[in-house]
Image (cartoon, rainbow, N blue to C red; front, side):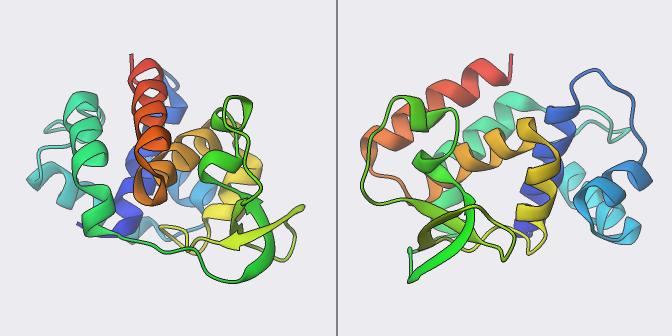
Length: 164
């Protein structure tokens, strides 16, 4: 698995029941169609998507995100930069967690300042500004990557609700 595989799976979940093609995912995530195709093949091998690669196995993905993401794709906040809010600094966690330490994905067109969290793919900030549902899912995934126990528990609860 590669980090952008998580982005692609969460984008599929964000689309809900809306039909999609690989080219749609590629355009909306600002990545190549071949990356999407290779990613879905890896996810099929990892048993995170169905054989036809159209349905995400949400419980398996939630299990991986909850128990493996912070070990496989660890991240430590770095210097203060302009960017797009993530983790507890973005919805939905920013409604229940108050913090003086904001986290952002570095992005020149971002509207916030905070400590930099490297996104799972370089085009995540741009894609998330275009899709609030994807932004929510990826911010929760980052809370699982970099958050303390409370943030991780809240992120798990929110993801479990959103994955139903």
